[in-house]
Amino acid sequence: MKYYLFIDESGDHGLGNIDPNFPVFVLCGIVIPEVEYENLRNNFNNIKTTFWNNINVVFHSRDIRKCNNEFAILFDNDVKSNFYKSINDAISNNNYSVIASVINKLEHIKKYGKLAKDVYEIALSFIVERTIFYLDDINEKDKSLDIILEKRGDREDALLASHFQRLLNLGTGYVKPLRLKNYKAKIDFKDK
View (cartoon, rainbow, N blue to C red):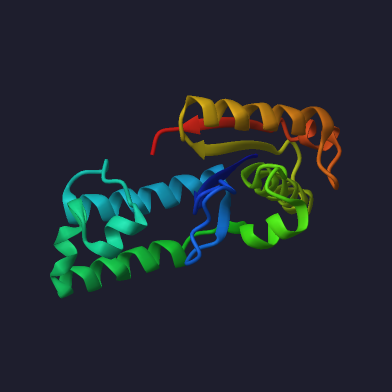
């Protein structure tokens, strides 16, 4: 059985200029079996078709909250109410698990200094190892894990791919490399 781990971030991973109103870096992953992913994707495509007659609409939380771009239709309160009900139903009626890592960058700097390990890499390591623990508890044979990250730029993607190769070769503090290899873990970068 194939499992997907879709990962996205919120906040800036840099330690240079920290926004005092949002001093955290959040990396969130959704673990979902392949068959359940098909259901969830179909639910969201139905929502997109219902409201825009176009499955290529990108659900960006900022655009939704601010009613920007395609989401200007949400200025109509009836449309907004129906949209949020559709989203809530899709989220509530599907089978997936959420694994998240939140790093307070100010506390991180206090403890480790500004030259500390990249917070994105730390968060990714945490989410990968917790996903392995999650998969270990599922009683199925031949499980595989595809990790999907949003493309961020050639340099950033190369750094994360390199970090993931280190995880495969060295493991994490709690997961040996063989466990990652047993799940045939691989990473892929996709457009939004």
